[in-house]
Image: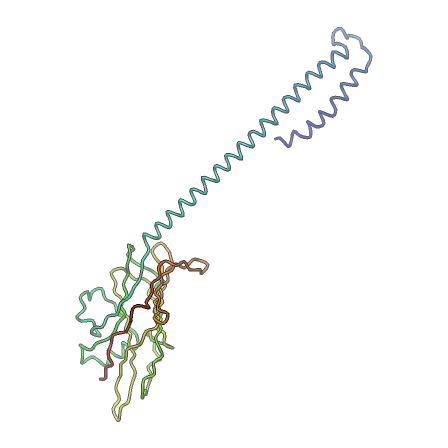
Length: 291
């Protein structure tokens, strides 16, 4: 509105003095007693346009006050929005923390079929190719011992999603190998890495991953399956929590570190927890078994 009044006001201020000057200069006309003389008109126009200019100034001041009030209101509104955004982010972060799940593992040295395990109904064994071969070769000896990495969940949430596990082991070269069992469909240690994908893991599940190497071996004229325990170098696990927070867990024996971090959408990581393994001597429990 203010911009629309600028041009008419300027024209009015330029034209009015000229008109008043012309009215003053004209000679008296008939009926001046009725309509007044030039001086009378001069006084009228002076008062009229003086009032008009005053009104325009008042409108301008009012307009500036309204604009200033609008700016102040918009600033206060923006401040409130920022407070709301920060509050929402804080609440969202609290929800993430409340639903944050930590996956962990421990070594379990027990029977290959877990027959003496207390919570057998919760146990799930990852059926690797090496474990399958071991199972076939141990049907007559149910008490044979195998080393497992037992995974479990800690936290308030009841499950995790899209769990990707990678276990890296040291290079292993058994003697007198006749057939290294490496072509298969079940998960196996290819190039000294075992990769497993679990769509969902609940807090009731106890995941057992066999850390065993099974290979066919000749000794003199007899062939048999031999079994050794892998020497693990690193655990890497990525998964999603129920609130779609992506967490990465790394247990690195080579560097002596154990780390939990959050993976952002851009791939950057935020450290949650870090601990040192330098003061702990880790050794995969197990024995070499010859059938």
